[in-house]
Image 1 (cartoon, one colour):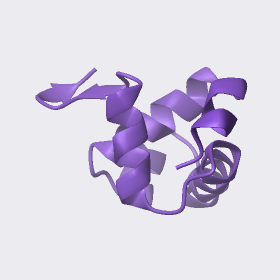
Image 2: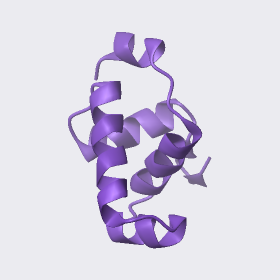
Image 3: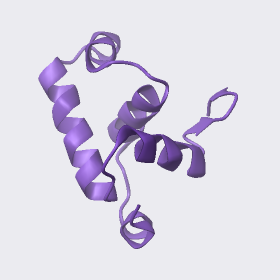
Image 4: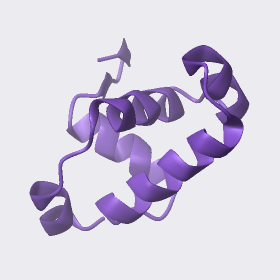
Length: 77
């Protein structure tokens, strides 16, 4: 994980919402249905988030969400 990149980059409220849902284990389809957007839009957000934060896996995204208190170890943040 590239922490320098993370400290310089802010995620949008929508990106935080996507991060939270992904870190909670929701599928792209579930996220799209919940947010009223297309699966392709979720995929685009996910790709941009991963690139912006320098992350390469869902596990790294989960660690990012925990480290930044987007989710907690006991549930959502």
